[in-house]
Length: 175
Image (cartoon, rainbow, N blue to C red; front, side, top):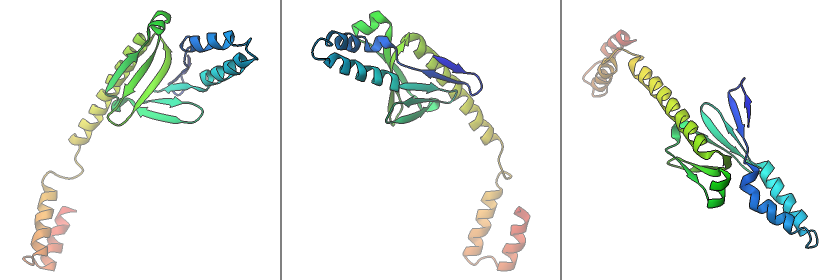
């Protein structure tokens, strides 16, 4: 795990423990005409190509083919998936679910602790967004009711109940 304080970004990589069985089987298969070496190469390549970038606002899943971003405020549920061996090795997969998609953080060490940190970050981000939305509703760009009056005037003008000159003179009061 590395931290970049300049951009507040944390990069996570899957633990080797997540690939423990694959590594053991590939080493055991080495005497079979070198098949184990090929298997070991592909396991190692897959292990090293996956990383996750966590910032204050989003989590990115990056592998050799895809780069997926998920905003923290959109995450609805964080769950941990572990087999019995993964539980013994203290690794697991975190599943981050939104209404539209999900992202898996595979092979994370201390998944319970990481889940708690992500949930706290989600709560902070949602609270900040609520504050921003509250500020937007508090600062209207026009006087309350003025747009309703302008719509009423426009309606009268469209119906022919108000002359062009009267409409223009009244419209100037709203600018």
